Image (cartoon, rainbow, N blue to C red; front, top):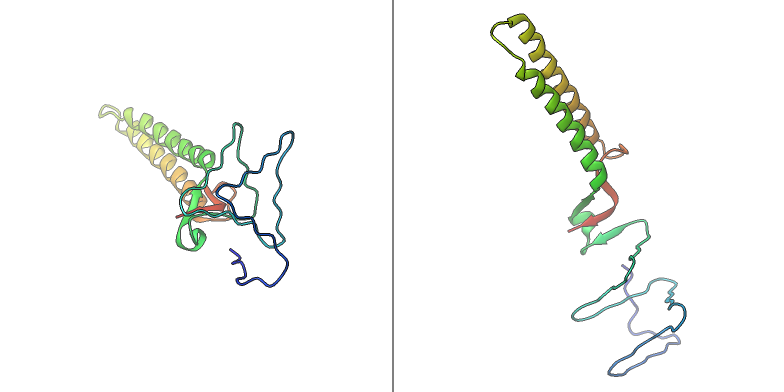
Length: 147
């Protein structure tokens, strides 16, 4: 965050009133600042829209110093995709383990081994994804951080 200069020695406009309203009857309102645009309040800031609110920048920090003191936001679709892969492997392993029977020890041993291989492979894959931050399947956001 860029802190404004006080006192400011350049040209400026100061509006003071009990309430200030800007209303664009047919289009929009644009605020531009070379270094920053700051909106501040002692109580509440509201951003309301009937469609959507867009934030477009290289980093979004939700909370003061969120990138350094907080943690990345979890990307829901990536997380769910990885969780589904793990759950599918666990389900497949469980299905193989259900076929274990004392009457067929050799077949049961093969099923247990296959279930173990299935789970090990799936867990290793997911572990690699989660431990490698630049992996495109890693469900942690590279842009949005929260604290």
